[in-house]
Length: 107
Length: 116
Image (tube, rainbow over all chains, first blue to last red; front, side, top):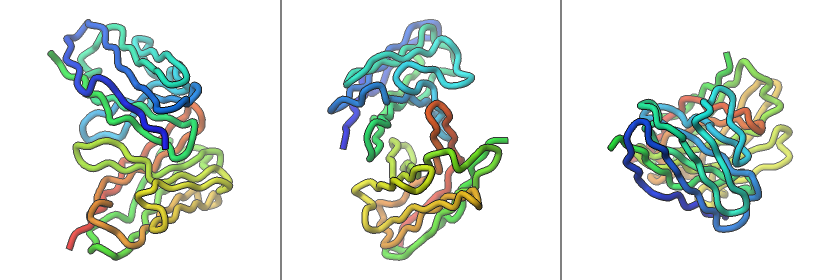
């Protein structure tokens, strides 16, 4: 099973700032890494798939990069609605696995 | 409207069974790989089981292997999860999740509580 480790666990920033979230895999997942945003009481929402492709309707301030074992989600300028929990997910090998999440909170 | 609607959750005693269902509408269900993902309130996401579009590949998390069975009926646009031998640690919100590359659909979840 591929273990995904996200860092930091919690990130405190202000609106307008840049957010950088990390996801590291225990072995290569090629480019098959997705990023999700989840708000309280809601299902996860796909932001990025295949490491760097924005899902339909996702604003351009969200971008993903990386391959192999190291991946990054960047939010270029935080909007108030971006404060949420973010999960990475690898789809390269079953069992599919998720990272433990990064909580992005308002500073 | 693209939609996944889960049903079948509830309160059940340890050792008993439940069958979850997921009804799909508004998209070509038969094209999608389907998964069950669960989440304990306030905690992270745990993949439970997945099935490819034609049921050719099926897999389970180690925590449910041998107790849970996933299946699908493309003619009925439905996904199922038969859960036997339920344990208190299976208590969670169970999501139905469809994936087709960059297309990604989630239901709102059905709550399963295992308690005596």
